[in-house]
Image: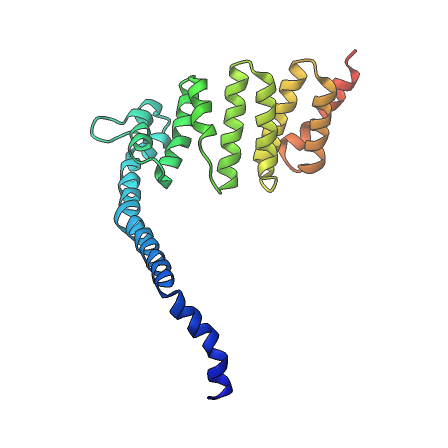
Length: 217
């Protein structure tokens, strides 16, 4: 018997002794893989396609601020509320939550706006920043100033590469703090805007707000 054959015996003995268990484990792996591909190809992908089709008209109405039609459709096409209900877990349903949140904000239904936007998430940092900022706007309308400031700061810090969006939402946080008598906190944010986004519109005008607050009694 060769040295190589001798070295292989422990492994072969292990396989023989555990053949049933190994066969069972392999079968489970095959079933899991088959189930995954079956779910993806036969169930999830068709749902994604149907959801995307259902979103087509809603996206057009969203572009022209027709909020009721975005939400409920026009009779011949479905709105985003239908997509969210019927196609939960799809990418289209996630995007539909953004459209719903923005649309409810436009209709002054601020609580529903907050609910839908909090349930939305995206890897697009600009869109996510706008979602956070709109939540801040909704809380501001509801006079929940603490949460409004928190979400404005969240929006302002989410994608600092976009100077316009970031400086705008930080400015809203500072302005809200200023209007509620929190001058020191407002000044700190105005200075932050000036430092981080000096080329933005809000960065250019930051000194005006800082100096105004410093001379107030």
